[in-house]
Length: 134
Image (cartoon, rainbow, N blue to C red; front, side, top):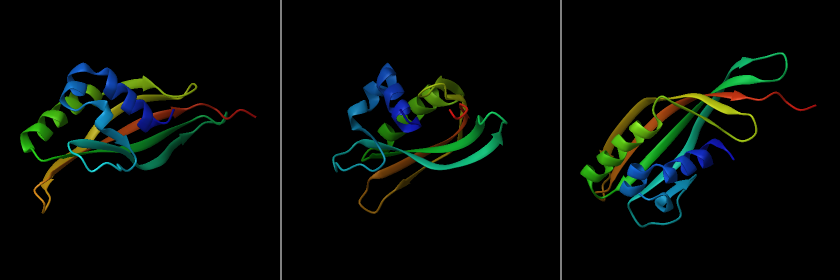
């Protein structure tokens, strides 16, 4: 599973967050459903930080979660739950890869011309990648 899929899985397992916005309304990549509220998890960028001789490494992966909701208050409640659920956490990925540390780097909200609130939160993840199998 990739990072976005694991975040989606962790969203579904977090009771308070899932009650505010069910995981069925959370998409990885681009959403194809127009109904709101919804969230989209995407990978913004990745930078190698350290490479070890055995092929393992540390990468910094930026993840963005965007919320689309007609209600400002509802989007802010989901934002607060996201910060509580994901900021300063660590967890396993596929194989022996791990997110050693996930930290919030920014968040913002703006109202779109159609009245929808677009709220985004960004996280940097320090990811330990396992060595390559030769």
